[in-house]
Amino acid sequence: MRLLTTVTTRPEAQTLGDALYADGVVTTVKETRDGHFAVWVHDEDRMDQAKAFLGTFDPNAEQFAEMARRARAKKKQEAKADEKLRARTEKIRQQIEARQNMRIGTVTAGLIVICVGVFFASGMGEKSSVVRLLTFVPWVPVKGGYIPGDVSAIWTGQPWRIFTPMFLHFGWLHIFFNMWWLKDLGTAIERVFSARYLLLFVLVVAAFSHVLEYLMSGPRTFGGMSGVVYGLFAFIWIRGRLDPGFPYRLPQQLVTFMLIWLGLGFTGWVGPIANWVHTGGLLAGTVWGVVSSGYIGRKFGR
Image 1 (tube, rainbow, N blue to C red):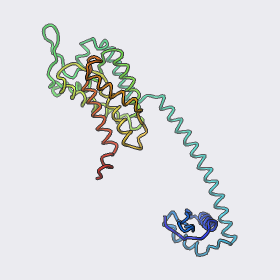
Image 2 (image 1 turned 45 degrees about the vertical axis):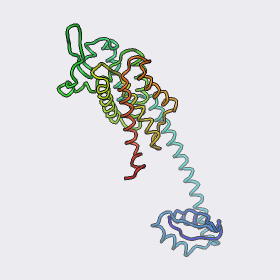
Image 3 (image 1 turned 45 degrees about the horizontal axis):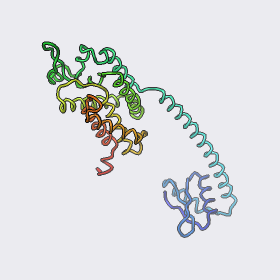
Image 4 (image 1 turned 135 degrees about the vertical axis):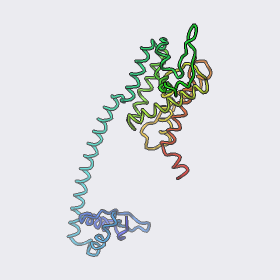
């Protein structure tokens, strides 16, 4: 905006501003510190037109008073039209949001279907012929059973193993709670970003958390979507804290519960748990949330 002129009374400033509006020049009237009233022109390209108009302006002339009345009437009509448009837009937004709230994300649904399918095909994790196809390391047959094989199988012909442990679940509670969290958190990511974004996120977090579990715990059987769930949780939590424009915020009670549950897993009090899968998911989701939020650039500059 650029300053056009300053006058002594508000009515004169308002009449000038309204008359200019009728002439196609948008202005704002602001009171100055000394009690006068400044008329500012919004579009600098209109300054010459505004100055020419000011040269002929007479606050007492009926011509300019009539222009001001027309401008005020026009502003009222535009305000009503804007309000109707806002109301219509808000109604449409609410309808879309309501439909979205009823619909699970595409990738999220696909992951749930695969997990449930594997759960039943593997006899709730008891059918070794299915389980050993999806474990991080292959099972090698020996006399009397099987032992964990070599991780090199991943890069020598069985690359799916770096991802597939997330589809294995060993009990009803295990799969129920993982699918419950996946439904809510996964769908949230799909709404904000896209199905492809969620798919990439899941694959990266799963691979990282599975590798971390292997490095920290050795070649043993582990499975579950928990690492991905912790990754989704951490991403939404951190992104919500660092990015003012991110639409989701996790309740503090949920954050506290998830962190306490992670800690309890390491105590052994809640049974055998792939703790480093959970930790890997939490770390990967946290890093992804910090980087994608732009916080580092805002904090330290570029």
